[in-house]
Image (cartoon, rainbow, N blue to C red):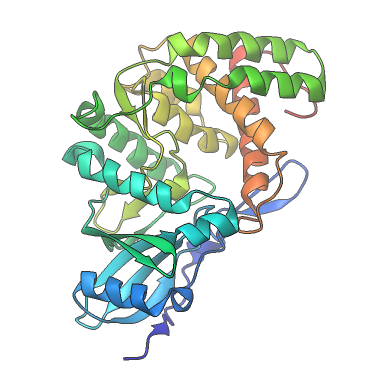
Length: 346
């Protein structure tokens, strides 16, 4: 049967956008330039259909995210729908992203994460070598839903923060076999980020404050909890049945159990919501030393403000603009919390 692209009208949430202080408007959903179904070799497409148990009749590619891997809803001839992610070593070479390795790691992580982690379970994984390319394919049940709206809505943010409280007990420690880096190893490069900012901006009270906080982070942010590490709104799915799912478990680490909550709140703070009230009241952070929260925000600001200056990947044209937006949002929240204003490159 001939496969067609889905003709379902795009929902309005795909038009969500945020604005940089410079006035530049940045999309938050139509961000990815992804591989299309018809560019996947026939042998791989046929293998995906065999794994799925039915032929593919239509495809709807997701526009969210910042990587060029294949990520699409596949509607099947038997009436089911699944979600498939796929990448090859040729994709890795073309785009300079270790996509296939990241998908392989994600599959391993998903197999080992506990049921209460909030991750969409894998249906199957499949690897094949074709024409000197190694393919990694992950199949998931398709979940009807959408990402949170941006700017953030109070009710939707509450759903997400409540979900993080629910999943925390299951993620309090890593299950057997899930060998993850501790925080100090995963975020041990902050000194290099500090040097880059100092070379760019010079000395300042802001950089002194951020540097001191970052230096304290290996102690303040350490822990035994499994932390997603990349928890943004585009990695969250609000299902039509009311469930909240956490997607893309490529980079988890061992750290303090509250890091993901603070990370997801950065965008909400940038969108104008009262995130300090949430931090003060949420069960994951209400007993945490405020300086520890600041130390994590300092690390993230250093990451965003340096990475935003890197070359723009052709396959992810909005990535640096988003990092610039997050640098501004993180700076604004941290400056408010510390009382120390930043410079022009904040």
